[in-house]
Length: 393
Image: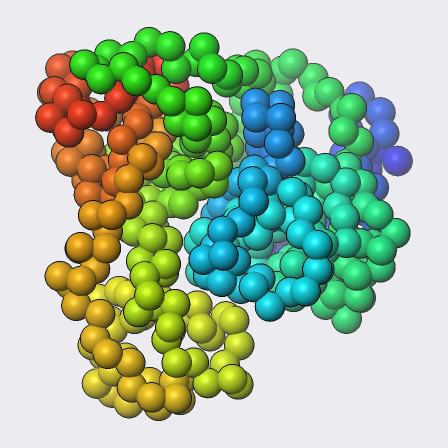
């Protein structure tokens, strides 16, 4: 089959809609369940490329959580800590957790607000453990190179049998030239086949040149994630997972702030005051996520003052003060930061420092590179100039 008709395009008024192969070849995908739409396939194909490259770069199973053609999270399959299991809402699951399940729990869990209603991409055959996590979350669909019978059974039962399940041919190689049409005009370019590996970060321009092996992995995750994130974009990574992604902003500093705020929220969720919030048993995971976001954000005083807490908690939680939050954030260290284009000013590094960034990778090439390097040196950071821009539109 070289064509698949879709219900509509980006919006219900955009008809007709389809995906197809211009050369007449068969599509490299099989829809095993559901009826994926136009945006679902955009997320699926971008997500698949991301996780395939993450696995190639790290040798570990990888997962990503996509929303609106940008990743909300991405991770490789390293073990979860007890705290991570709790903040990702998988601590109650009595099962053997596989590396792929760990990867998705981390990809989904780092920014649960943004991942709500995601489209998932998995680098490996989806197993029952991974499917069990997916089944309990609000999600539009999943793409993977295959599914075990048990995993497929679990996923087919999701969304009253309408969950979108796509299998992709992992050996599919797209044409070297890619095209898209805008306003009746066709754009053409060579595919971005850039390989990101250890050598990608060899040009270290700061005084501190101690780039650890874990930092190289984290920077690779950051840059591969950015390769499939709508630009401008910045990505914070720690311990094999993206913890903050700022996508599609017109200014670099706003990318850095947005991603930094998400990284801060990820770390604040691990504070004992947040871990021990007295939720009522009737409050579901999504509502808990919303309440936590309010509690650790600027709205937490409103949450306590207007009586909203009475519907959520068994008792009124104590205030999480700005001083307490800043002290906790200061304990976050060794965070890696990638940028898809050069930093024009040192203010980006100043903001990154507040979120525990120690390792930075960016293309370089700004007329103010000296200021950016000097700001990194002020904080003892390690910065690599990659020489390569990674815009994605």
